Length: 137
Length: 137
DNA sequence: TATAATTACTACTAAAAGGTAGAATTAATA
DNA sequence: TATTAATTCTACCTTTTAGTAGTAATTATA
Image (tube, rainbow over all chains, first blue to last red; front, side, top):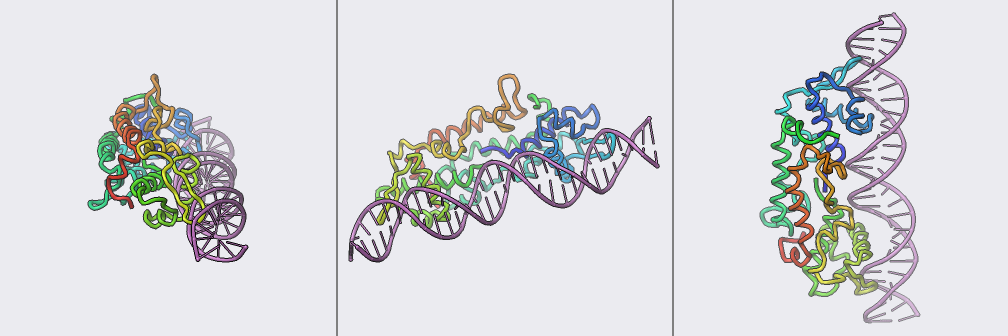
């Protein structure tokens, strides 16, 4: 019952980039060291963030990464969507697509409240909101 | 962000057995058909439930399964524990063991409430509580 | 005692997640 | 133009999760 490693890494990476955005570009080596993420795995995640246009990359010497838009426009849920980790409306504790109007699983009702809180947490938190909060490693 | 298939299956299996417990033993074929769980995979899960002493098995012709104790004594969280799917106190959104008193992740505070609700849902729901609720398939 | 119906055991395969390796491409600058 | 430091691309490896196959052991009963 938790986010995939990849999603967790991606959120932490983007929060870190947001936090350091006034210092100019930040590169993969810096990110990997600061966040204790395996370098090669990190570059693979970065490639996906670039392809999804959450991050812009500058190649070559002195290259690196920066956000492709304002930190207030990127929601945590946008990141989760890239890695199929977003909580879908039809998802329930005992299976996606299992519960519906006629047939609700045994934990359906108890699940509604935490689900809604988590959906809100992901959908309403922007990078700007979380970048200033907590420590990053 | 969801339980493993195995955990979901296990909860549904046990809820179903509880629901039918006055009809005597229930066997693997019945469970697999009623719950749309692949037969061979189900028997593997049953073996774990037996080994964990949540279920008692009677082998041979006319054999099957029944709960090994009262349905009110088996909590959903006991089942999740078997498959490492229980939500641990030290677990946070952005990694197990990552947050502590000095270093909290960016979503730490927002995570507390849904986490507590889910822990309660799992820890305080017995098979008896959920067996009567909702549909089983 | 033979048979049929059941669980238990051992081993395998498939798919997804997590992670690594190495070479190609790009761009700044000496 | 050569070097260096960076991203990108392709391919692979490892671990975990999900699921399958076949056989052995057990037990009721005809």
